[in-house]
Image 1 (cartoon, rainbow, N blue to C red):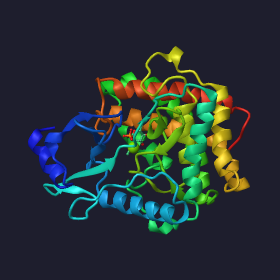
Image 2 (image 1 turned 120 degrees about the vertical axis):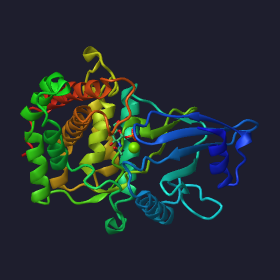
Image 3 (image 1 turned 30 degrees about the vertical axis):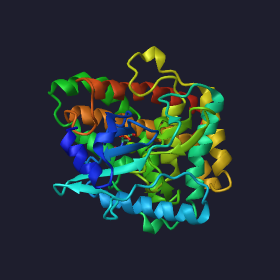
Image 4 (image 1 turned 180 degrees about the vertical axis):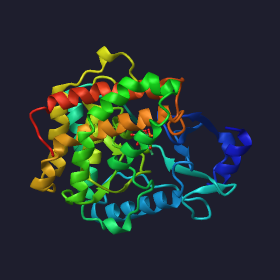
Length: 353
Ligand code: GN1
Ligand code: MG
């Protein structure tokens, strides 16, 4: 980022850019994230530029975050929730040229994140902490929240977008992706289950985080305990299976979604059980029997959807996710298919439809 740009942004927050070091931060695929560190003291912030090609209406994010913050402050004042810092004009964002939305947040001191789980206890504690988020917000008024991305976890629509992206059957990318495409079509019964959940109204809408991947949890550097969830862009109404599903997707495998060596993409049954147990420790008094029936569908649902989304983006020439090399989305999709197959096998004695 240019110095003059940083100066302009930080000025809106009454901060002096010359006192801070600014570096790219984290592994997010959508927004641009920077860590601001004061050169003389411990003061640190997270500065983010919202990707408005994806989040068309950033104000929806701000409203959702404000609603969640107000509810948590009133009912669970001890809960760690990171609010946006207001600009000196009292705004949630600093807006440049009408379409660049910048926001500033405090950095949680002494914290860090992981891209994979390293032991069973950590899997349990992390899932419990993520579950606590949904549990705490369970009494909040769902109608006050809006989707920051319409149909974000609508699997039927994601499948439709995938079939549309498969339209050009002579393209090099289509031919290269054919085995992945066939695998996903072969497993489209996962979409049938989703349609049934929607049409029969089996799951109630609640407030979800919708991006509960392991690196959206902060851990304390000293105690190594999970302390706080980050990335509130997709707090919205949805089904609980989105959140437990993304935990399973990112916490039961010994490698993350960027791993290209198939032999390293191994599902740990111990981690899987720990994630379910930890999550239920927070959520079992809330989930109904009807909801509980779908807990093992959740990981399959989210991993399948992520595979669809990565391969769709590959077929569409990488318009959505940031990539580090040409085949990145293809590799990610293959990675998710490898994990999905193991999740399907693990749950082969269970029927969801
Ligand atoms: C995106 O940018 P990030 O890493 O927070 C995506 C999630 C995906 C994830 C895959 C708004 O999240 O849905 O699960 O990549 N967010 C959006 O790593 O599409
Ligand atoms: Mg996110």
